[in-house]
Length: 471
Image 1: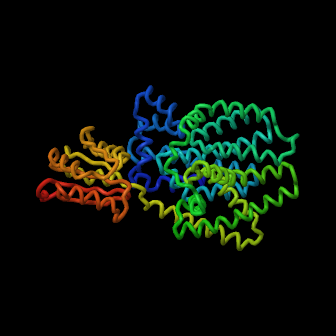
Image 2: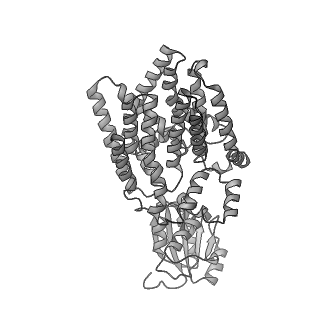
Image 3: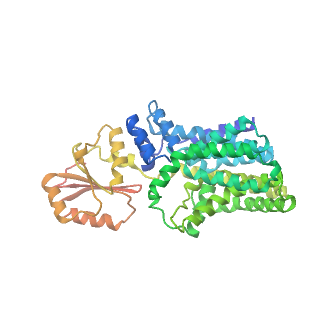
């Protein structure tokens, strides 16, 4: 009953305001990726987009029936809710029923889990299958049955095709085996499982090798700031005041749990107790340490991808809370964590990542034939998606793309061809100097008749001659 109650709370938190915000660029990409023909879809998947392939396959079928923003995101809500009983099962099997309930409760109200259960991306699916992979792995260590092998292989491959960073969790599982006596390691079952898993990962590994990491070109080299951002991301999805305090509160029991795991390892040596104590610390620390080290060669450390660490992060917090000796301290800390987690969730409902829906709606009153200049080109897809949804689709000849600010000659050519023109600038913050440069150049031949700033987007309307009385 307690797990069902937590699932009900998780469902409410993840459904609340689900369609209040429009899709941001990555979410729009998810939807657009489902549209090509079967041949083209599989070709792209095989050549470049095997990451999150499981989510794209599910979404491809899902959008045949559900198309609104809220309905599209419901596909992420489902694994988000199912992660709660999965976390309970993992915590109970590794530690105790009380730890399982505590970890499931923390996941229920965790802002990071809620936010990515409300996003049309594969991250909530990743959290679910990482949890189930670890659960199946522990079951396989305890009982080397065919059913447990099947569970482990299927859940691990599903985790990998939810996001490639799930491979670091498999690495953590392998490392945790070092704490087991050799006679307790079901070597044949594990080797068979890993062989099947490796075979299943071949398409994804092929894509990774062919890309040479080129799809991560935008990542900066990580430092202490990105490490802090990752911790606050796992704790509260953001690093503002509430998130910073919540991070500190969660790190207190996590440190307690890590210290307890170290004592267990030193006291018991290689044992089943040491294995149980070591799995979660490895799953938390190994992805961070490995991606940080690999970033010396090519940047790979990024907070959003390290959502694979969310399960061990919250699991260790639950373990630490359970091990605190002072009851009053434990209760106050737990209340503080839950209260600030709920506050972080409430804040997340008001945070808009990118307002393409608002930007597209603002242009509805203009002539449907006005061309739209996009700086940079990636802005065209989400803007065109919402124009289509609003019943004013952009034709190919209306879309003008810029890789650099327009020259005076280019503006003169536009003025000869178009009496009115829109300029969409993305990403754009307040008082962006590039916006000013573009506006000044456009002003050589056009008059700016309207300008509106949306979240991460600026939108300007230029007219040759006098401005209309109304937009």
